[in-house]
Amino acid sequence: MPKRPEGASELAPKVRRTLELVYGVEGVVAAQVWQWSGRIAVAVRGAGATFSQSLLWQVESAVAGLREPGETWDFGILDSTLEGPRATGSPTH
Image (tube, one colour):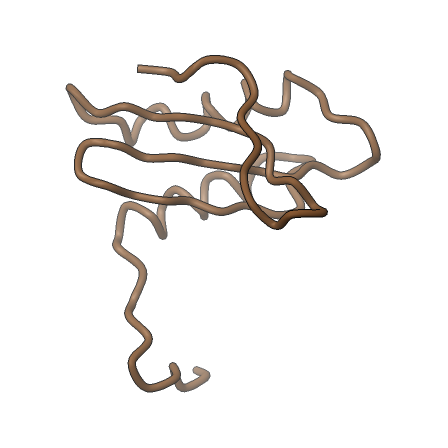
């Protein structure tokens, strides 16, 4: 197993599991997950030049079992030019 750089922290278990499930969705080629108290944000990049809303629905469905009562989840597209999330649609509660 590769050695983690000094000072680097392990991923939180929920973030790690979210990434595993998101990468299990066909068509996802990149993903990032952010976690705050009571809130999770997931951004994905799909294969191909055009984005399909159905990809976000599939990702949302894949992680539905991880949601806890009162937790807010947001889903969006990972912008390949900015390497950051770009909001699409409304937050999911």
